[in-house]
Image (cartoon, rainbow, N blue to C red; front, side, top):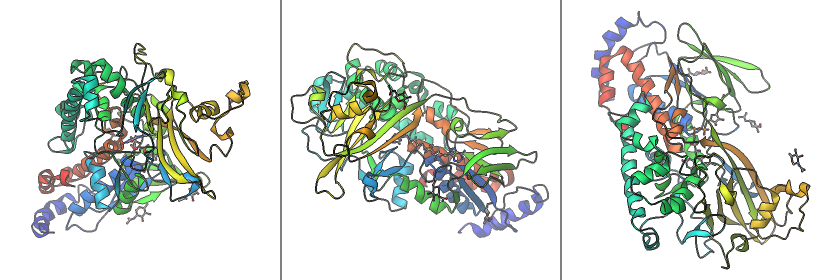
Amino acid sequence: MRAFQSLFLLLWIPVWCSSLVYARGQVPLRGEAPYQPKRVAVIGAGSGGASTAHFLRKFTDHFEVPVNITVYERASYVGGRSTTVNVFDDPSIPVELGASIFVEVNRNLVKAAKEFGLLAETAFSTRPRESDDSLGVWDGQQFVYQQQDTYFWWNIAKLLWKYGLAPVRTQRLMKQTVDKFLRLYESPSFPFRSLSFAAEAAGLLDATASTGAEFLEQNGISADFGRDIIQASTRVNYGQNLPLIHGLETMVCMAAEGAISIQGGNWRIFDAMLGASAAEVKLNTSVVSIDRKDDGILSVSSTTGHSGTEQSEFDEVVIAGPLQEAGITVSPELDHAPDKIPYVELHVTLFASPHRISPQYFNSRASSVPETILTTLPQGLDLGSRRDGVGPTGFWSISTLQKVKAPSQSEEHYVYKIFSPQRLSAQFVADILGLDTEAESTNAAKNQTIGDLPRKDISWFHEKTWHSYPYLYPRVTFEEISLAPHIWYTSGIESFISTMETSSLMGKNVAALMVRSWLEKHHQDTENEWNSWDKAEL
Ligand SMILES: Cc1cc2nc3c(=O)[nH]c(=O)nc-3n(C[C@H](O)[C@H](O)[C@H](O)COP(=O)(O)OP(=O)(O)OC[C@H]3O[C@@H](n4cnc5c(N)ncnc54)[C@H](O)[C@@H]3O)c2cc1C
Ligand SMILES: *[C@@H]1O[C@H](CO)[C@@H](O)[C@H](O)[C@H]1NC(C)=O
Ligand SMILES: *[C@@H]1O[C@H](CO)[C@@H](O)[C@H](O)[C@H]1NC(C)=O
Ligand SMILES: *[C@@H]1O[C@H](CO)[C@@H](O)[C@H](O)[C@H]1NC(C)=O
């Protein structure tokens, strides 16, 4: 408000003069009447869409630009790939079905959690802590590495003893990479019209141009450490081995220090963002088409299933989810249609059981196995850049999440989460729990899934298949952010880094580009004010 008076005077004359020229779709700024809100449609209520709405509201509040935000969401819930399900259908025991952790350097998420008073807890803090080792890396034959802490790789004498300087070099490389990445949040990089240019300016193309394996080799990190530790991380986080996934995402996997999650579910951040943005959120509503009219107005058709299609007009549309899965027809065609890229098909199996993981299955004579089991390929097996690269383990990870009281029983059950490239068979689940299955080796039994196991052994389960993230092949260019005039895209960032935070960063970036484009068209003064305003502080 401080600058209101002077800005009012400065703006009034040019606004008045230009009002004839910009009769339709003009930006009503401070001091101007009558207000005509900019109408913005956001398609998708995940991290990207919620962040777009959140920052759009912040930026426009600052300039007192009226804006009307409508968020379309196909699903019945907010959060997209960040969502929880309830163990035993009990709302007091939510567990993450999708994105489960973020880290301290994830500025947007950390700031939003603080702003909305959401409680961040250390990741894995609920695990039972009944095993000697908390984390182990399994190669299908043996545990190649075990340690007592989960996800705190560093400063561990054991690691240094086993792998020499590789852990130190990896940590240094990871820190350098994170520092470069953080440049994207600040001027002069932010906001960026082109992710390809911004990535180059930040010095990150070396990392995205090589596979993880090449990038580690270039930086003097031994293959043993890469295979046992780093690849265990790329597999649990992205379902990919080092000869496929690029060097930047490989480094992201090693930046697990200070891993946290929001109590009750990470989706609460996105829910709170949408609430604060005062957007109209239309759940159960799929956008089916966008018509680009001659006057630049965008007509969005949506459907809720039963009630036919509905049309609304917007000045700007943000597509905040992978376009290839959105089922949206755009006409006339987009100027820069994103390429279709392969996504990982990830099977997530959550279940509760009174049984612990069987040491026998893991060829172990110990009384327990680690509570988190990551996997890697055995030494000597190089599957190259194959997408079906899970190898002899058959699964990516098994995590013991917590112990819960089973309903109407005094017994405590363990809650497990398994990531795998294929749906789990009943046999596999029985085997890892050490259950006696009466040697039913008939084809029919082989075809059985977790739901076919007795209730006494599996007291609750939930299976979900995600298109979780892209196969992160090395590349040096990324999809456009502006797909056509007034049509914006957040998901191109997924082939750079695929996380909740990066989707949020892109949402903020698109909001900033949009507001700047409104200001630029009309007013030198606000443009200057915009440029000198430290948006990184938000
Ligand atoms: C199992 C799993 C584990 C993961 N682990 C992590 C992790 O630990 N940490 C991390 O940071 N990231 C993790 N990720 C990645 C993370 O979930 C994603 O990168 C991030 O949530 C993507 O957010 P987004 O908003 O870009 O996309 P989404 O969350 O996919 O949101 C897009 C939304 O758009 C909606 N939509 C699509 N088309 C339409 C349409 N036509 N009309 C209306 N709505 C539409 C969809 O329903 C969806 O809700 C994980 C992902 C999975 C699946
Ligand atoms: C915002 O747009 C929606 C949908 O077009 C409309 O129903 C609503 O009245 C608008 N709100 C304002 C404040 O203009
Ligand atoms: C969305 O659909 C689900 C069922 O498919 C229903 O339970 C829910 O109430 C609907 N939500 C809204 C906001 O319409
Ligand atoms: C296994 O299940 C699939 C899909 O449910 C089915 O098509 C197939 O015939 C089954 N095979 C056997 C051997 O039962």
